[in-house]
Length: 438
Image (cartoon, rainbow, N blue to C red; front, side):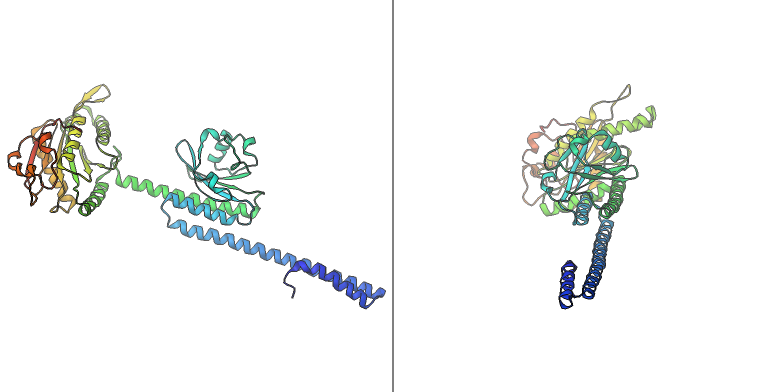
């Protein structure tokens, strides 16, 4: 059996010629022609069959790519991973297209960012930022409307900043789920995409759009579950999760965690006198001021009502926590303007530091709560420091602890003190807005 059907035409002519040589008569000539025709017909049938088999194999391969993509996207919860899987699946679908490249342009601020790319020239486009201003308005409108856009010449279509890497025909497949527009799957090749490849890419974009919608919904639900809807701060669930993790890290590093629990003096009177809408606006301003008093990595959460908690890690000394409390008291002692009203709700802050005997987040918060109520009893803006156990080798601060009970801390007293050798366990320190350097 001849394995390559392209050899059959030549073989047919050779057989017919040999037939004519063997029987060089009119009848032999007719028989030779008949043999040639029959062999050519057989070659055409075989060629069609082979083409059908190749098309079938390619179709099965495309279905396999889409099936594998669908399976992996079911368990993917990270947007970047969805992008990566989408682009590499598109690259497989484009395997038969010379010069093919697939890229994913995700929405990023006021424009798009090429988050992933595969195929010819991917390095030239990966990571590019595409401002909205560089995309023709009509193309952008069509994409946001869910329409697939084919562009033969980007410069002629009105695109700005077209260079050698981007100067080629494109098929732009928008990634949309409901009202959410996630970006564009951009596909290009040296020739027009075969119909069956384009149809497979359409199926791929549907899968990817659904996956991105699922990821976005999961992130939104997680955000709601872990954040206070009024202020945008973390809620009790987030606080417990982050505090548990922070205390675990503290046990490994040996550096304590500080919990600062505060509430607002006079907040109930604001609600009673001016209504809950005014109270809500006041809480939003307080949340913003608290964010400004801490580092980006610190946790600020709202327990409910007018109670807030700040979690700070990697403290070097008790003074670190005191300085943050001083900032908070100073920031919240300033009047808040809501409408035409100037409102003042000074904060009472309780500070507690973790140590070897405190392993439970609830216990640390109870210590901070106890200190906060001690500060609150004095009224006005103030804070109270809950003491930690005395270390085996006391420092000057620990040695002076009995005399400090109930006294005001000063910068010179706190300078150089470590957290562990602070105060006798259970002791508190009075603090009325000290003037400490930040």
